[in-house]
Image 1 (cartoon, one colour):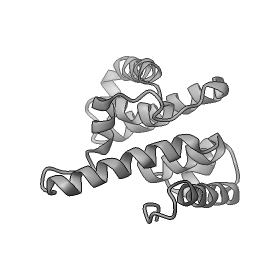
Image 2: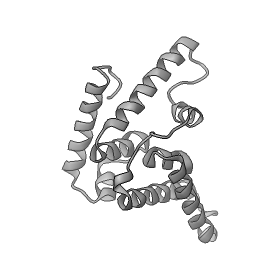
Image 3: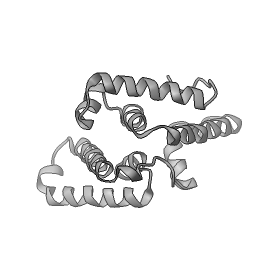
Image 4: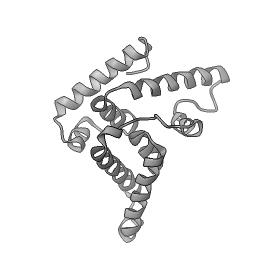
Length: 162
């Protein structure tokens, strides 16, 4: 969960490993508070998101998403899209669609890509995204809407983005 979230937000497995290490170091430092808590998973996910967003804020020129994912990482990302229950043909179609979506998401500008990832992949609400990024709620809604429209254009009108 920690590494997968970090890879989605940072786009680089090497940066994601650094972020995950930071998260687990923080968890170790607060071990007595985190481990007995029923909200430990939520704490890990929130801490991961915050560490990644801090990293992105520091290294804006290096923002990339999914750019260095290898086949094994891409498979982890696509787990929710293609299950073993689906016939092989459908799995291949979904894999092609996933690859096209990843490519299209990479092509988005930073201000559209990050809110889209937080909303669609991390399940954050518009308000949470606005607070996290320090922008207005209207800007988040506009950026997500424009990002979806850009994805539709980049994907040639394929009904992937809802």
